[in-house]
Image (cartoon, rainbow, N blue to C red; front, side, top):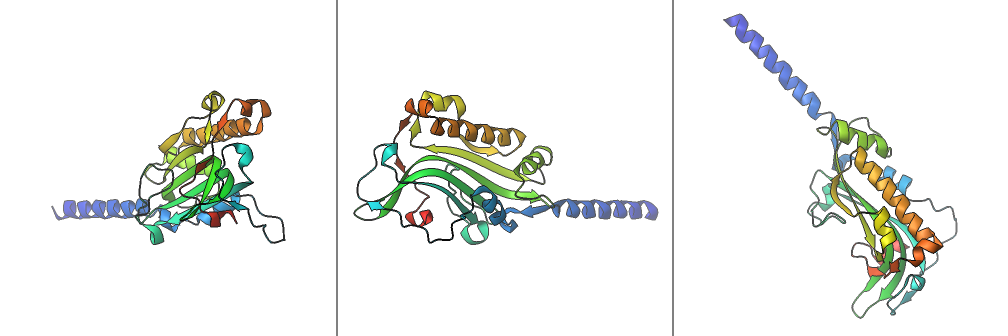
Length: 229
């Protein structure tokens, strides 16, 4: 009887140890260094000169031709400092203490001064990632590996994504792009993001395709004029 109890205790100890090891296999989202991923996503500024001040106007842009600059903006929020923040691109979700959020905006912009504030009008698109936890040892900058881990090791790596467009409407865009909100960033999700980026860039960059798209610049809630400098 004593031997049986000892065996049971040993088994329980092993199970507890394995459980702890499994829990320790992941890094919480708020502990991840998303700056490394931001550097990879955002083109580096090779110019050594001071950035030029962007024009500010009180005229609301009506067309794409009224916009004055093209920008890639990356914004990062950590649950350590910003828990409870409404996360950009996730339909009203708020940031948890153990999570982090990366947002990449690829936009054509214009700064407009209103009576009470100054806002950014733009067209373009954005990609948003919500990192809940990531398996230890994974390189956060290698998104294909992150998506594979989400697919195969969902208890270890949990990441969501969203894609949005701004001020762009047309049949050609629909062929390439379908808005996604709060989707698992698994292998399929990685493929959707890549195909969507290719499709949107194709529409924006092609003279013929862009003629069949309606561009109506809109205010970006989560991008501020200071982000453009």
